[in-house]
Each structure stands twice: as structure tokens, then as C-alpha cells.
Length: 181
Image 1 (cartoon, helix red, strand yellow):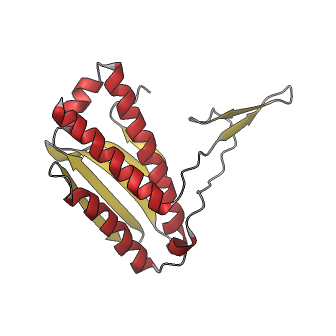
Image 2 (cartoon, helix red, strand yellow):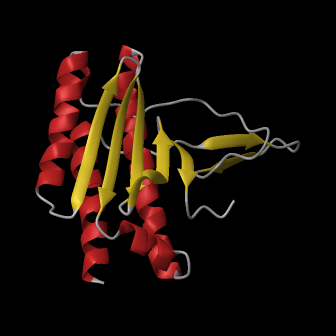
């Protein structure tokens, strides 16, 4: 239980620190028009046929003014600062010409997944973490887009770091081990 709480605290603090620095989080909505002229707005996955616009939250002007290399250094220093303060947290920050990849893994995360698969309280916490990571990834994507770079955030299995438990690209969840769909 203590290990579980440390993981949750670590992830939430990383997301909070980075989201406060990068930008206020905003929610992107999908809209679907119906035949009676009404409009349905959803903060979740859009329905088939919905019009979806790629949008990014506004970011702080000082971050917008950073060069590509300054932004990369700044991002890595934030992640390193948070991970170094947590003995259970690990990260790998990878930069390629067209992308930034942030891999995170925490001692005990695989055990949490096993619990969350059968416990609605832990599943709700996992879902919260995933949503915060998705929003953070989208915010970061807005900054890196001007350099033609995608942003990936992955949470890895601590027992096998080759296995992803969650993956997000530019604010769009590509994989969630506990997704019900």
C-alpha cells in the first residue's frame, strides 16, 4: 500500500509540476451535429463522424520564445529534478530529429496495474493519472510542434521496461493497458 501511494504521489507531482510550468491545462472537446440542429459536445472520445480539430493549449510566452535546444534542456531538467527526488522513480529522456520520448517507470507500478484491474478505486486513480499525462503530453506537443517534433509520454512496466503500460503521442492516448475498449 505504501509503495502504491508513492507511485501515485510521484506521478501526480510530476504532472502538476510540469503542467504548472508549461501551461494551464485546457480540455479539448469534440462536437457532433445532429439532424435536429443540436450540437453534442464531449470531453471524451469523439463519436464516429464527429469533427475533431487538432488544438493545443496556449503556453507561457517565455517557453514559446525558447529555442529547440533550450526547450529540450528545460524539459529534461524538469523531469530529472522530479525523478531524482524519488528513489522509486526512473526515467529515460530521448530526443530524435522529429520527436521527444519520455519513458517513466516506478517501482511497484506493475503491482498497481494488477490491483487496478479488479478494484474500481485504483482503476479510477489510474484513469486520473492517464488523463493528466494525456493533457501534459498535449501541452508539450504544442511547444514542440513549431520544431516539427512529436511528443511521446510512456509509462513502462517496472518489472520489464520493454513493456508499455501507457503510451501517449501529442496528447492522444495510443495505448492504456487497462482501457476497456
